[in-house]
Length: 282
Image 1: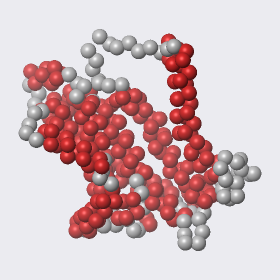
Image 2 (image 1 turned 30 degrees about the horizontal axis):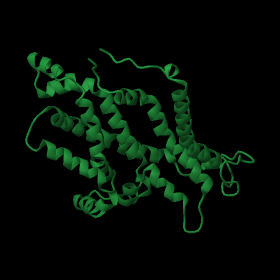
Image 3 (image 1 turned 120 degrees about the horizontal axis):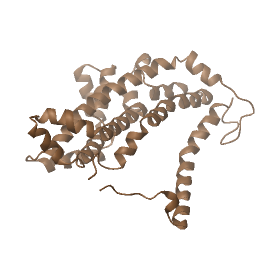
Image 4 (image 1 turned 180 degrees about the vertical axis):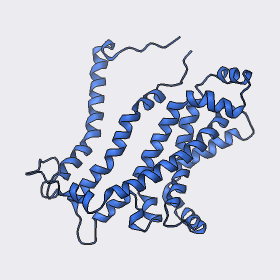
């Protein structure tokens, strides 16, 4: 039996007022920095007219120089390649391992969950020396492969629990039916579980992509050559010891945040489906 949800107009007046207030406040908090950033990118000198003051005249030199002088599309390509490859590697491994933990019984199952959960509390700075040492020993320092390796292993716990929780909502009767039809473990996962868990897997993939796209710490640590930089690391080139080009910096930031926004607009239905619960409702 499907659960029936009431629309917002069916709620009591007091509840609607509080709901609208909370939604409006969340929208204001979310859009304020974006609007501030966009207005600043149109000003000749953002420090001369700070905050939400409208520009005296629209200056697009920052956007022009970002494409013409910095060749930002090259860095977009670096970020896109590194982010996509690392997401594919991590999601393939995590989706299968989460299936084993969620649907099978074995010794040490609880220990696996605890160990993965503890990694959520380890800051990236605490891993600097061992990861940096590993990258050097593998001989991949200052290569895109180093970032792909690091990103593939970053955020595993978050993606694991997102996918695992979605697997938990899939009735085991679906697996039993597949086994009766002669499917093995991999066939059951690929033909039954994976299609039904697609919203949760896509949500984990998009979250991992956004995290990799916006990551700065490791990108600035293991990459030296300018041609191999990702877009977040590119922002540091606008600041020198003597001067900061704020117009170009804000213009580049606007360009950089556009892909994550477009990505969410395209895949937002998967977020909604994943947040709404299981794929099958009895």
